[in-house]
Image (cartoon, rainbow, N blue to C red; front, side, top):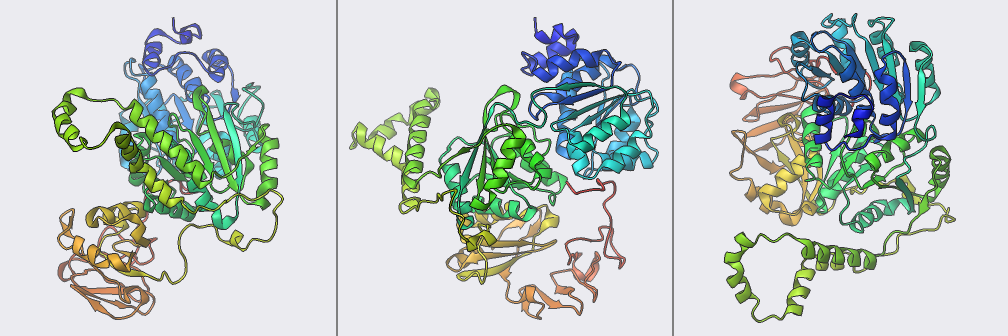
Amino acid sequence: MNPFSTLGIRHDIVNAITELGFENPTPIQEQSIPVLLSGSNDFVGLAQTGTGKTAAFGLPLLELLDFEENYPQALILCPTRELCLQITNDIKNYAKNMKNAQVVAVYGGANISDQLRQIKRGVQIVVATPGRMLDIINRKAIDFTQVQFVVLDEADEMLNMGFQEDIDSILSTTPDDKKTWLFSATMPNEVRRIAKKYMTDPFELTIGTKNTGNVNIEHEYYIVKARDKYAAFKRIVDFNPEIFGIVFCRTKIETQEIAEALMKDGYNADALHGDLSQQQRDKVMKRYRDRSLQLLIATDVAARGIDVNDVTHVINYSLPDEIENYTHRSGRTGRAGKTGISIAIINSKELGKIRHIERTIGKQFTKAEIPTGFDVCEKQLFALVHKVHNVEVNQEQIEQYIPRIMDEFKDLDKEEIIKRFASLEFNRFLEYYAKAPDLNISADDRGFDRSDRAERPMRSGANAGYTRLFMNLGSVDDFTRGDMLGFICNHTRISGKSVGKIDLKGVFTFFEIENSAVNQVLEGFKSVDFQGRSVRIELAGDRDSGGGSRHGSGSYRGGSGGGTRWEGGGGFRGGSSGGGRREGGRSGGGFRDFSGKRRDDRGGGNSGGSRREGGDRRRRI
């Protein structure tokens, strides 16, 4: 018998979660489910991320609600789109053997009309981010007067993100006699206040010690000079060939730059941050869940709610400003009883921050040494040997090629063949790390380091040796800078290392190419189409300097207030204020977007802006 049955979960739900791999309840599930199934208590549950909180409240909800009725009976509020979708999908999976169980995800960045239609069709459980939920309430499109249960998941993060007023407004539309269940990884004073305000004598359950870290996670730190941070980071990654990790940066710009630098250096990496559209975020997350990405570079807000199995490492490229965020970051690994490693790359001035985190999470960090070039090469070599030894051979398919393979190797003995196979990957690392310096510094080395002022891996300054090019595709074509890098390399067969800075605009892009590769890029794009449009690559000249040069099929000239104007084939035009409007007819149906912040998607008009409806109103996530 599945142990979940003994907790009071009925047969059809137990069958569903058994198929999902649920064998034994986690401590938070084992202790909270019997309490919540009574339906008679407000509840506060404190447990780290990755301990199974979604099932802890999701399974009791499925037991307590009346699925014969099609009105909202439970509301689950959470801080981010990713977590909203994760909870929704999990509960749908738990309920797959139940009839008429309707769960709707309500979050900003998606079409609000679709969400309104789903609500109108009938729903028992609404999972929502606060900003979009409040928008729907203000439209009087949902009735919460019969809600029986409200769940506040990741309550500490919702308050950190400034959702206090939204939560107050949403809960004011729910009955006074509802039951409120609050789940949080940490219990700061703000969460304590919200519990006191909305709950009556709640049952409080703490798994582990308050605000501490997951016991299955090892914590390490490396001390390097700021100018060596990116090189040290790459060396750590190379020393862990099977790494499947999340890398945390402090800002969106840093996130994008690290991701682009990694892609240029040949790593399977991409960025996740708040400037991406929902479609772009979904694409990145699908690639990560499918493991076609090895490294996900993310900001704190974007990464909240990411529930991906078997993350081996969390790397803090930059330590968070809020100590509590370190707990949430490290909780992305070591989930559901598995082990994980959380790494911090710091300079000597940040050692005090490490000591503060140690006191907060109740675990000591291990000071680790940046691997030497020799260490990395050795680790990579034996990882390759291990992979060859364990590869699954498709006898049926390869059999037809064996005679030709044997003929190719007839002049080589076994030892020589092994050497050559091993050298395929090994030579690349030997070459890169041939003269690799020691990047470690002592914790006592607190001398002034000018490189502390700049930690970015990208080049700065004049970008000597590069030529700036123009392309007539941009962010409105659903490109991120990472997508654009891949697009350029795929069509020209140049290495990502040959691509410099990518300046992605609304309807066009400027990018830098090593001088030696310019002709190859121009040739590569001579006959390329994108969604029925010819891709045009030209020398940028002074297009982006406000000058009046003409190139190719269109001309470009600066307006008096920073606006720009295309004539002929270019098809978009700006006025003196630098704003934009959509135009058709003689100008070729072009489109303008100078600020990157506003554009009019409806055509005509001079206001230069339309506002996306229904997005979360606080921090863009």
